[in-house]
Length: 530
Image 1 (tube, helix red, strand yellow):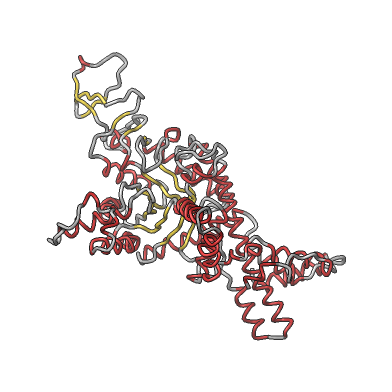
Image 2 (spheres, one colour):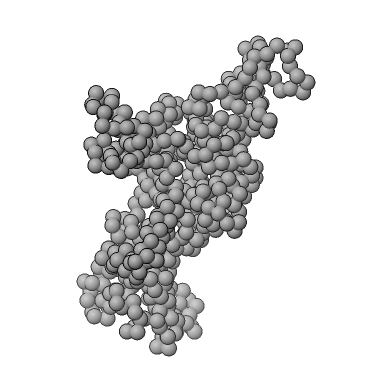
């Protein structure tokens, strides 16, 4: 809705019902309507799903048009990220937000900090989605409020050219509201539990749900040991549950990201039922580690598998979990991906042990042989030592090219002693282009960093505390924070306005007229930052 159409709408309502509405000025009401474009989370989910679908189609046509996001653990963090995007790039296009289950567990649980094992309250996930969108909508309201102030000023001055220019900015305003890819872990229970939680996440605004193929009650972080996967039919039931939740709530373009942890998982909880040779269950079973035995060696109540006319004993741990054969990880990843895409998923997430374009491409290209438009959401994880990994890749490349590497110790390439070397420069360039390279060569549509703001918060507090409580005192804050905010034009330096003070003042004036008691004025110290 444009400002003009909102204005006409309010005037029509007032003409129909407003005999006693003398204090309701259509301009003010229209302004507030425009500043609150989204009424519900479902409005947001529908809007952002259409953005993702458009971006996916553009990527299919041109792999240089990949998308990115940063993981955010608080609405304010997400808000500042999107404000920065508009400030520095003039747009929010192809810039999303990732909601990490890891950070919800570590930072948002009422139990306190928890590992990434789905032990946190599942309701904390939709609550964070709602919080993020509350802050993004407030960013819209603040920026539009500034524009409406400029419009009033131009109208009061009789500057028609300025009025038209500001109205064009208002009508062409790009929202800070962007897609959230939301982590539902392994679904927090059975398929019905997954469906119910998905609905809450969608109602909060999520247009994309990422779900993984681990056992829900044995879930582990993707970059830790002990992962246990489920048979495909169990996982597909949860994908179905997510799709039905989208359709029930009218989000027809909702996006499902199917994550496989099979690359780092060597256990499964149960053996699926194979109905015919070569079906998905049969393929899953074929990856189990087994030992051929004679029937006479079988124990009472033992589970055996018949394979090629012979009996096999699957390797079973004391926990009852079954072991996969070594060397089957990549084959299992490919089967997971193909099966998910052929049964309702829109995109893939392959959890890998290192960030290596060639290794990612090897898996994705095998999937593309069967599903040509397969697309990946890739975790540019802080769990990787990016410096060491890429210096080792650069080292191996130099060896392959026949270059002299005698000055380097491959096992100690993290050392600061190598920071200014040719090898380090090559590695940093590979890191810089990693996302573009992976988008082009490995089918990565979306690059995200899961936990960046966890680490930036820790680092910034470490640096500020070191100086402030040390010999720098107040200079640590002034030089390290405030002066940078002022010179970089960070909106948050005017923290009162960022928190909504100007919006509140304007609302008070709209509601109370000359009787409004406003916080702005000469006594407001925020004027020092004008």
